[in-house]
Image 1 (cartoon, one colour):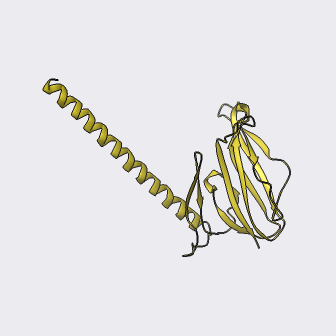
Image 2 (cartoon, rainbow, N blue to C red):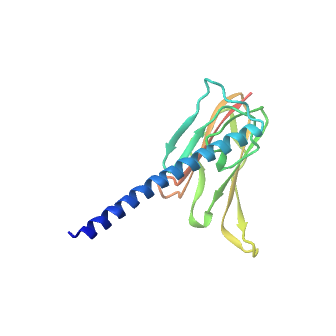
Image 3 (cartoon, rainbow, N blue to C red):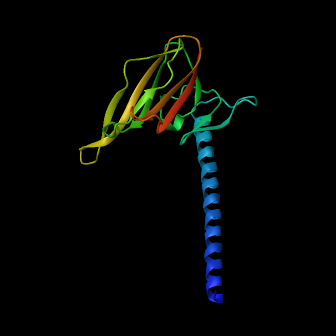
Length: 180
């Protein structure tokens, strides 16, 4: 090989190596900012501070990362940003979950494990189509689930998003409730 070709190959290799490291650093920095924003948003919404013995971390399942947090106040309406959240409610409170869905593509949210004596599902989930700026209905929308706190105790609700004829879900959403 000619000397020029060798130098060119080494230069491309060096740039590729530097570019990969730069991408990893950017992803790590972005991940840190996201966690910091989420933590400050949760503490600003009346959440109780984490105890030293509380659990934290992440558990991966498929392409979704679920975060385990300390118990805090009822967050209001749960969205995908609340995936993995744990909170406390009083008996009689309603928990509303609104998640993005695309029914025209065959995707649906489904309750994977039956819920026990702590929570009761209120009716069937409802789907509301998202309209575009021109007023035309788009293909996506939101699916709304309602749960009613009926008993005392702790329960985890897990929903999976996928097509009924496929065995592997596209996403999952879970939350844990303690009813007092």
